[in-house]
Image (tube, rainbow, N blue to C red):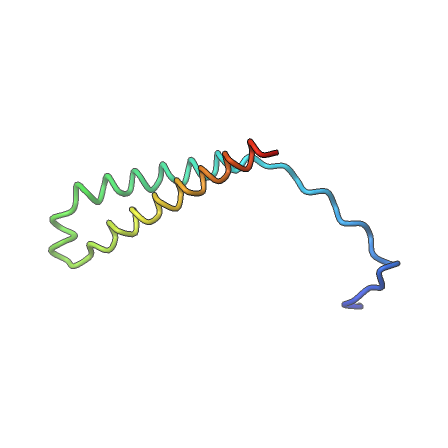
Length: 79
């Protein structure tokens, strides 16, 4: 088995597959919103156990999901 091929032996690169990333970003963002709502309800218990970072993890996940959703919408409109 060879690890490198000459350029003349290579097959052409496949064309990129068009995907709809908006659905994945939306589903993930909804999951973070649900987790955030649960942890807001459980906030006294989280504070007592010193695990308020779980709440901030949900906020960060939500922020990243919103950014990703905006990026995927922008990218789809640019095509």
